[in-house]
Length: 362
Picture 1 (cartoon, rainbow, N blue to C red):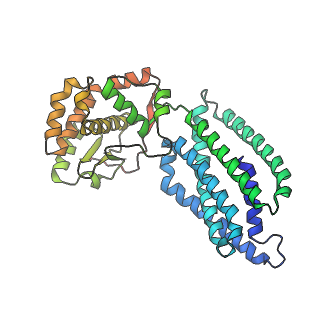
Picture 2 (cartoon, rainbow, N blue to C red):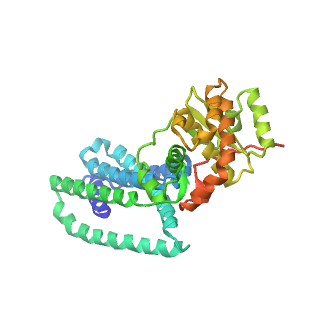
Picture 3 (cartoon, helix red, strand yellow):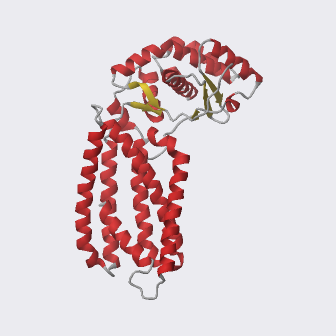
């Protein structure tokens, strides 16, 4: 479907730059094409810099977004000949959109192929995936060769084909992405897992959590969470410094800053923090959010810590609640890891989208 709609778009773009028009300037058409491609390359670099860290963490989401953006770009290319005065602007916007598709689509494909290579046979899976796509594109090419001469000047027919194939393309890709079951923890999957654990005392299987994971829209959360914050953003008051040193002396390699008024949690990591330390920080953040959401009173799993949690919630000092939640997670961490492994989750590494800031204590 994608190749057929791309054929329609290419036909429209060539018409827009003047192919078939004796009055069109070859130099102007060449410059338009160069500018379009140049902006597309710039967009590719900027997108990789701004959102590259999120592509691994939310591979399914970005795979779907790439498909949607690709269809939007094709739609812009089809529209461009109808607005000659704005052709350059529309063509450039379409090129930038397709550059995002190139980065997001290529990167997430690699992530999904890696997930599907169950026997560490990534090259084999990648080769077969590429061959499969080539076969589909070849079929699209043949159909494109047949329909292109038939659609010249038939605007209604072109748009009917475009919308039909686009809807089929998006539906097929949504169904394909929604059945992918990933065992590595990202923020969305960790949030769903821990909420169920704190409420019901059980860890859900990967296929159950993956079905519940939102693909396109942001997950509803009580706080916005940032992992890998700079030290200056978490150590605001003098009391934060003394508390962080005390925690570091206990062997803790992360600092959590809670702001109830801003509804924000920031986490800074020591340069020597391991994947296990980072996962422990993630569990602590989830417990803080669960407690602040007011659900801890219904939790049998946390009933032994009810008085301790109430003390943290009622304190005017937000760091008290953070310390309480850290102590609880330290107590439960080994048990939670065992439960995660038992249900088939990967705990040796994670995809929490941690930024690059790290601190050191000398």
